[in-house]
Amino acid sequence: MMDGSTQLDSLSIDPAAVGFLMPMHLVVSPTGHIRSVGPTMMKVCRDARVIGQRFLELFELRRPRNVVTMAELVQGGAVRLSLALRMPPKTSFKGIAVPLGPGQGMLINLSFGIALGDAVRDHHLSDSDFAPTDLTVEMLYLSEAKTVVLDELHRLNQRLQGARKVAETLALTDAVTGLSNRRAMGIALDRMARTGTPFSVMTIDLDFFKQVNDTLGHAAGDFVLYQVARILCAATRGSDTAARIGGDEFVLIFPNLTDEFMLCSIAHRILSRLEEPMSFDGNPCRISASIGTTMSTQYAKADPEQMLNDADRALYASKRRGRRQVTAFTADLDQMPET
Image 1 (tube, helix red, strand yellow):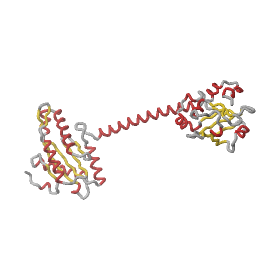
Image 2 (image 1 turned 120 degrees about the vertical axis):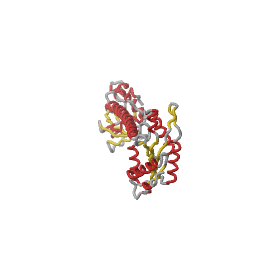
Image 3 (image 1 turned 120 degrees about the horizontal axis):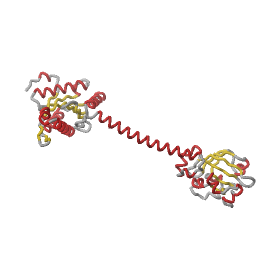
Image 4 (image 1 turned 180 degrees about the vertical axis):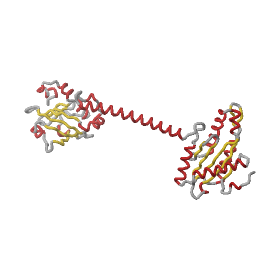
């Protein structure tokens, strides 16, 4: 058996140069034995004992069809090939086989064709595994550039999605308290009405808040609003909506809560917490609240605007009764005597 150097002497080309120009070549004897292999092909074959193996035992020949021996392949002269490795991952190749001369066998040069991406991944190849003039190198550069661009686009898309979520959150958030704003409240109410979810509405208007602003300034007022927000959040569930809809006006929405006793208990706990003095720069800030409530089960069909109006009517009934009150809406609310 001759080595690759001897086999390629008739070409008057240094075997290393052939390997550089055609890193995926094979030289096959007339008997079908592989006598020389390019460096990349050796790598693709995972450094198996390729030299000495029969070409048609290592590769499955798909085109030309009906060729079962090396003699038949040699007789065909220069011919295009379509073949695949028999060993996993059964990489596919395109190539050309050229007779070297009488009794010299064939020189076969292969490429991956459209299977390039899979082959590069499966065999851990890089541009150094291909001839510099091979279009494969350009394809690898393009593929790498595409990957970089796609990765950057993915990162940019993630940043844009993050920015959009932040913007959407800000658009639905009250800047002073961090609670939902009027728009978010409207969305929550519409969702409850649209889905037929039973729910309750509680409107809250702070009492004596103007005195805090007038005596201690707007910084103290903002501090109080923030503390009120913390109290409301502590009194509600994660599924509830707590919103600031005006200067000192708040709305709470309770999905799947239509028990009047429980609703009034929550309102009284909120009142009790709000009446605890809040210290701002050593100065006590004293407030209270008037509260009105209504439940969707009181209506043939829940209408968010009507429920808000009715909860407000109950709230103002609390104010007429002397503030620091909780009033549940009823149809005869306006006939109730003031205290």
